[in-house]
Amino acid sequence: MSQSDVIHAAIASSFGDLDHNAWDRLNRACGDNPFTSATFLSALEESTSVGPGTGWQPAYLTIHDADGQLAAAMPSYLKGHSQGEYVFDHSWAHAFENAGGQYYPKVQITSPFTPATGPRLLCASDKWHMPLIAGAQNFTSQNGFSSAHATFLNDAERKIFDEAGWLMRSDTQFHWSNQNYRDFDDFLATFVSRKRKAVRKERARAQADVDIIRLSGADITEAHWDAFWIFYQDTGMRKYGRPYLTRKAFSLMGQTMADKIVLVLAYQDGEPVAGALNFLGPDALYGRYWGCTQHIDCLHFELCYYQAIDIAIERGLSRVEAGAQGGHKLARGYAPVTTWSAHYLPDRGFHSAVADFLEQERQAVAQDQEFLGAMAPFRKGETA
Image 1 (cartoon, one colour):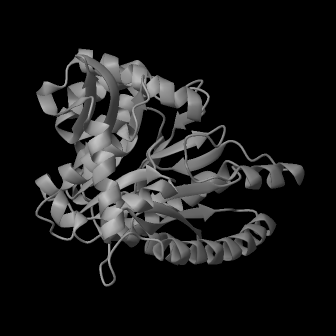
Image 2 (cartoon, rainbow, N blue to C red):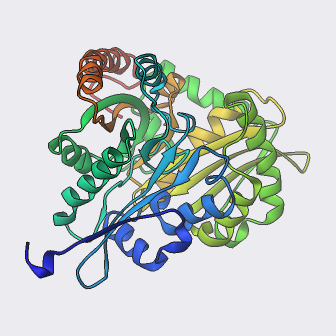
């Protein structure tokens, strides 16, 4: 290795120890994903959504080149549990601990609470990919951690982790794909008649008794965040036991990245009754959170799925990623796609057992997607 190739790897336990501008330069070079930006990750930390007591301890892996410039970085955390990841490994934890091991803490390489595809290897050039992965492996092995997990990988990085020998895991999400539609009706024209009529009825039913507005940038006020916080708490308490994000997180994101946010709110008699929060990427809309204080028939579908499609078409975005799970999205024009995660397990016996499990699981996922694809609402010859 020449002097110019000398690297300096380190772990930062707080985003306050990092150069935010240098981090964002890497993030922009890797697609400018909102969830791996310094603004989003630091907002999670500053709001105490991650950090002490949350089970998400920041452990950002960075590499500086011989000139001291940030050349590569990884959004990584030490996890004390398996919540908020959307790639479920509880059975792995039980098996490892039943065999006498200690599964937690583990290394999680992701954007917390965010089941959206994006970069996990923020690198100034391709030459830093393997050193960054090697750094994650060394951090895991040298500290005696059970495992490292990189979740919701984009296609390019999936191949890189695979080449590095990490175990690959597949799962299914439902995404909407924009085929250069002029408007929502143009999109609906791809449906069979019965399914098209069903969607129109749902939209009419949802919109009958509410006024729907979309807000972005400076138009989002603290009053709007107060309303959405109530919606978010309701959903969080029902799904997770407690919400992952604190109230302060929404204010910070509104202050620092409101231009990357589209907040959709429904009002009834002048009062907000439901809302959906979306984030904007350069070529995608990411649906993240939803909640309501009143049940209104089909309003969930309208705010989370149909409004998202409207926004994507209006903004010329190529896709909508509507979050984890949800086979009900299929009838609304969202198609099954494969999502990927990569897993490093230093213990060879554990590695072999999980590898066997993943081979069987991938076959089941592929069969399930084939079945789901046959249930799509599109006319013959049309695709999502």
